[in-house]
Length: 309
Image (tube, rainbow, N blue to C red; front, side, top):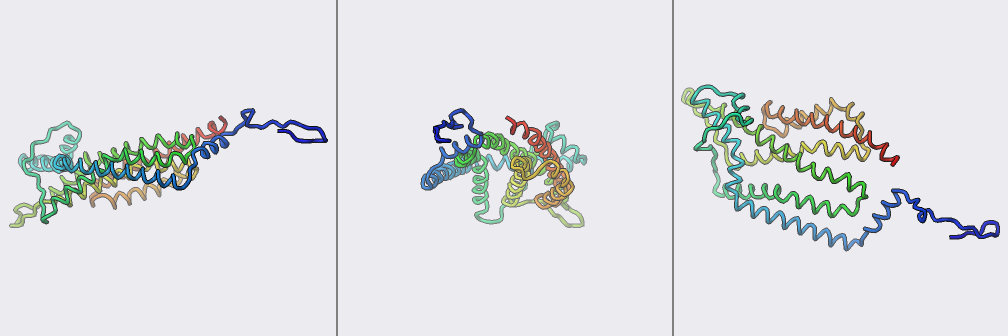
């Protein structure tokens, strides 16, 4: 490219020809290369939704074929609590420490012949099985749903944003499963063992037995699993906010006491009305909050190096 300066032609070099292209220019060029008309985006969105719906429907059908096995899996916490309660009634000695030994695998549970679950409506069992299939279908099809969602939004992200987003894509289901495992192996057995101990049997002619409805029991298990799984996403949310520059470690440290109060309130809302389950939810979430602060500090420590390079 040439210009006339003082009547003489002068050559001006294009910075892009010398390799003087900034990272922002390269990112913008990448976005421009992946830009497509609106109709193509709508067609792609339709195809992604079709794949997501198909994966969910196939997963639901497959889970419904094994609804009895899934039912047995979800009823296991009640079997653990019933086993400990029966041992307590037979031998007169059993308590939270025995339950802890069972949960840690240090003590075997006795076989429970009859698990106290009842159904009071004609179609209650069918709709319960369908609900189990849908709950299992969401879990089974989640990898496909997350992958299709990521493939749809990935073209609109810069390369560095995609690289930063991928670890969270793998960490989210892991943390969700950790929250669900906490409910399955710790929260529910303790809550159910406590509920069984509140029964009144033959006291002054009054008998009150704990016989939960199958629909209400599964609703409680599924609600707690989803609630704990969502609460365990706290580090991902805070770390993403730190990456976006919305929060920093100093701010998170200053609001620690308010965050702990909010965590305790949320734990009191989503858990059954007993202090054991509230502590078992609030304590891990508080620890995850502290881990989130460390993650944001690591991001702040690496940020100046990333800008220099």
